[in-house]
Length: 161
Image 1 (cartoon, rainbow, N blue to C red):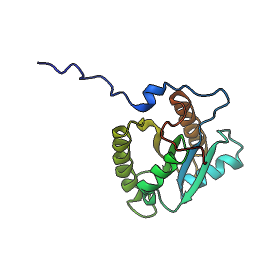
Image 2 (cartoon, rainbow, N blue to C red):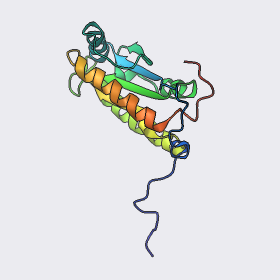
Image 3 (cartoon, rainbow, N blue to C red):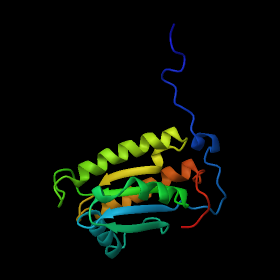
Image 4 (cartoon, one colour):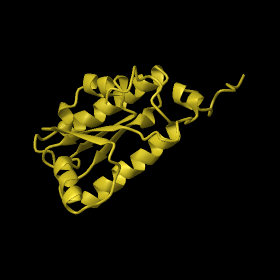
């Protein structure tokens, strides 16, 4: 007997909301950015006057590998609509393997998010070097558009951020 659910996407809480958001709603994005690469790329984007959402909240961390699961979940539970983690390109980590740790950690968190009914697209990992200001601005803008399609975070207790 064939499994009729095979190939069908599991319905999540986000799917149920269908992106229904107030007209004046803007997604809030918390960004955990590596000090050596992504944060510097964000700084260069600002100096270069590249445009991206003003609802982006950057948090400088020494390494993307230092972003604990608790930080990600706390941001989502306290009002963030999405979390962006930016790190050095694979093989370029100042701490040797921190970005590999971040990649493994994000994969696990996305599985947990699916398990609780939260769309895993609300968590995004990107490798952005210090000279890639354009990539940084585009990544934030693209992530913002994805979150607009998903609508407000249904698991947020309240809008604290």
